[in-house]
Structures are given as structure tokens and as C-alpha cells.
Image 1 (cartoon, rainbow, N blue to C red):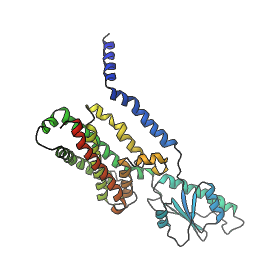
Image 2: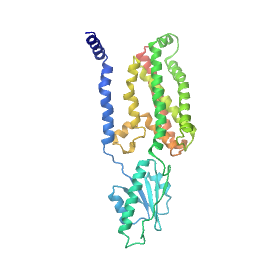
Image 3: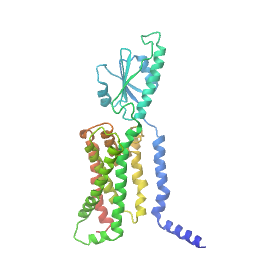
Image 4: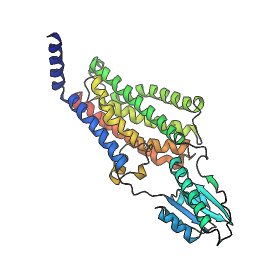
Length: 350
């Protein structure tokens, strides 16, 4: 009987808390739906390769493999045209020696392309054996625009993970910390003073921001100097990007805390707000997603943070190459700060 009464009380409590009930039932469906479309949606992206001095029969074989082939004059610089035309690689023949230059921003794509070309080249040379000077299969001389032949997928993934963990923990801690300010009555006493709403927002942002900065610096230095994660570019740009990500997470966490009454309700925002950020941070190639998913990606702060961090740490790009991503992060932070001021007025009745 006592167990039955306990079960009855819990059921009533859950039914009364409609938001918790809805999130409990709907959040898994949203995440599962997102994952389903990420892995099953058709992609218009195809492998693009440039060729120089390669005979037409081999070009046709490349096209038969659904590879987009663009012919270039041999006088072009391979690495420059890869960047200019966003190619996955360039194949050229110098005499009988095949040279393959891979972009290697995604080692999985590069390895697949390299293996495919090796197989095709071997078959092509065998077929042409009696009609050309290529009597033996020459080893393909391969070079890389980014990384090396030892580069793995985790080398690309690590910069994204650094940014995501900074984002996640700052969001969680700032949201719950401000929620405690409300539930303990500290915020109520604070608003009884002549202080303005904007001053409260900036006060909390700077207050929690100090610890967010310390946390970000610790995470970045630990990842680079202790875990020895690859860093090709400037560590100052890495810090700047992570600090902007932390600012976005801080302002978003404090904003959403206005819509939560308990720490449990604050945690419920994680599967809705934080988890989808992972899918669009660059772990899965956004360019290969369906068009409507690419539109959603543009509204995710981690899309810009992940791109900037990967560009700095893996590709070695400079500030001028990532400033657009940084501007977008700053824009998100500014938007959330403004919304925070309005949220204070509406929900906290200041």
C-alpha cells in the first residue's frame, strides 16, 4: 500500500509537471529524428578532383566513379587551385610519374580518394600496358595540403571537442548558478536596489565570465601542452575563439535559466539546445548534409566555433581567415545578451 501510494504521488507529480513530461517524451524523438536525417539524407556533395596532363580515358574512369573532374593546365600550382576551387585533390602526370596532392581537411575522404585512384591507376596501367610506355605501375607520389599521411580523423575532431566542452560546461554552470541566485532570493534582494536590468545582466556575465575565462584557458593549455593535441596555427587565436564560444554559452545559459524553475528543468535544455550543437560542429561534414540541414547548421554557434578551431589548429589558418566565424560568434553573444535583458523584464518582473 505504501509503495502504491508512493507510485501514485510520483505519477501525479509528473503529470502536473507538463514541461518535464513533454521533454521526457519528445526530446529523445527530436534527437533521434535529427540523427536519422543526418545519416540518411541524400547528399549533393561529390568528390572534386583536378587533373593535369592526364589522358582522357583515365579521366572518363574517374567520372564513372562519380568523381567530378576538372582539367587544368600543368602550369598551375596544385595547392593554390585546391584552395581556389575547393577541390579534394589534384592528380597530375609528370612524365610517367603520377603526383597526387590531397587537400586532407577530412582524412576519411582523402584516404578513400587515394585508395580509389591507386586501384584505378593500377587497373589503367595494366590495361594500357601494351600501348603505352607505362610498363609497370609507378608508385603515386602523394603530398598533403593539410596534415600528413599519418593524420587521423581524431586530429580533425580534437579541436572541435575542445570548443564543445568549453561551450557545454560554461552553459551548464552559468545557467544553474544564476538559477540558484533566483531560488535563494539573492536576485530578488538585488533588484530591490536601484540597479538597472542591463547592469544586472552585465554584472552576472562579467562575474561568471571571469571563471569561464579561467576554465577556457585551463582547457586549451591542457589540451595542447599535456595531451599534445595538434596545433598548427596561433594559440592566441585558439584562446580567442574559445573565449567567444564561452561568452555565447554564458549568455545563452543565463538566458535559458530565466525559463527554468529548478536545476532539473535547467538540465532539460541540454538535449534540446546543447546536443544538436555536436551534430553541426564539423564532426559530420556539414557540406555533405541535405540543404535544409545546412540551413539549420547556420543557426548553431558551434558550427562557427568548430570551423574556426579546426581552421586554426589543424589547417594553420590565420585571424583574417576566421574573422567571419568570430564575428558570427560575437553576434550570437550580443543577441543572447539583449534577449537576456528582455527575459529579466518579462519573467523576473524587475
